[in-house]
Length: 370
Ligand code: NAD
Ligand code: DAU
Image (cartoon, rainbow, N blue to C red; front, side, top):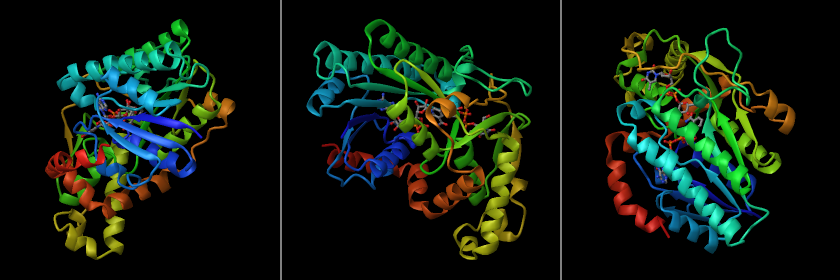
């Protein structure tokens, strides 16, 4: 039986990881530490909140003393670090929060882990600090270049990816210098339930339903490698159980799509849904499909993201050969499941989008933080 401290567990991937883990390992204890920034949503944890082996703590990863005390009192042996500022566009508009959380916050966690596990000797051997990072640290690829491997040199291009690269190096340094038991995974673009609607796939999905413009940056030819979020959780699971200490593992979907093709695909899948379910026309009267029109009429090519990385792609050979990793969910299946989730969880996204969610946090988090 393990005790996990999951930072950022109220965010998109962190929450999916918590659901995955508590389902796979029901005897383990899971503690989520999350500051509930605009991207954190305690409702993402509602399905597990009543379980006796789950605890939510509202707090900042930069609060080293709080983290030390959690590690001690809960006898945590595994820390899985998701907490971050994660949106590239926000990092371009205002980099400071990214440096504070992604670099200083990660360092605060490393210090706490070293202090409690190593200096105080609570868990000198069997502890693990797993750091969740991104493929963006490798920079961008041309259409012809081979996909990123674990040996690809770091070349981050945005304030977001630069801050993640810095955090990766700190994690590496704490292993090399102090002997902290660390692993790192660098993953490609995730999609699935609870994805915050500022990111491409949920943004496009919800804008189609509301008949709003679909903003495609530049000419839409930029390429991303999409992975269903549960398959990211599965990859981290394998790294935690079988990964080599001090090692980094690339996780990806081997599933490259041009942005414009993803946008057109979602337009088409929504049309299919409207053709088979009449009630959608009543629920979403502004969607072009409600009037029998093409959803892709909403596409608008807009000014490109400054410094927009052209292409990301992950070579998964190492994690496949070393740990036996292979994504379980095909893109066809995953994107349909995701669309169904958004159609079935209107309350979730309406609360997120109309801002009432923040009021909800203010009145409710105190009860959940125990
Ligand atoms: P997200 O923005 O949806 O969630 C981030 C979570 O961290 C939120 O719950 C937020 O409240 C919390 N948080 C932020 N600052 C905090 C702080 N100072 N203290 C405590 N909690 C804080 O992000 P996500 O998309 O779920 O990404 C999770 C991690 O995975 C990040 O480290 C990101 O870099 C990495 N990653 C994301 C993707 C992707 O496609 N989204 C791909 C690869 C790697
Ligand atoms: O590659 C992993 C990364 O994927 C993670 O590290 C980041 O945390 C995560 O946010 C994601 O970054 P991207 O910038 O790739 O994701 P985003 O959804 O913001 O954009 C995907 C692509 O779509 C990108 O090329 C920009 C483009 N885009 C995005 C938005 C929000 C548009 O064309 N229009 C949009 O409105």
